[in-house]
Length: 147
Image (cartoon, rainbow, N blue to C red; front, side, top):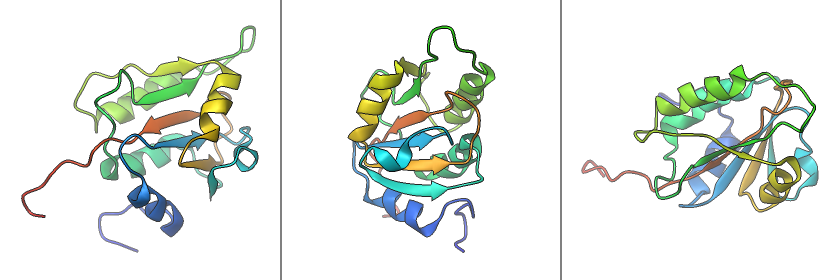
């Protein structure tokens, strides 16, 4: 255990977050997502909801403020139902840690899978909500005079 690091963040996830560079992307995948099949390293976070992981990760993770949106969700397939409160919940969590106004981008299902193939890593959560998948793009860690 480390002071100031959420116990929800595994040693493997902490390592991945620290290895990521500016512009790298990480996928927060729901339990339905083919996380193990797409190619990037897969970090298991079984039993955890994506919102809890976001609360744990975002204090440590600078979002890219040089792109239109550093956050992308999978769009609902036409004719299917989804819990629309998920996007609102994600937006509220992200806005606590991101200084710019943020609108989460939506990406069609198969385009989301394709983009996930080039991600730095995929976190396979235990979240059972449909279409709860989220991609975050890492930004530059703010400079601190303490360093």
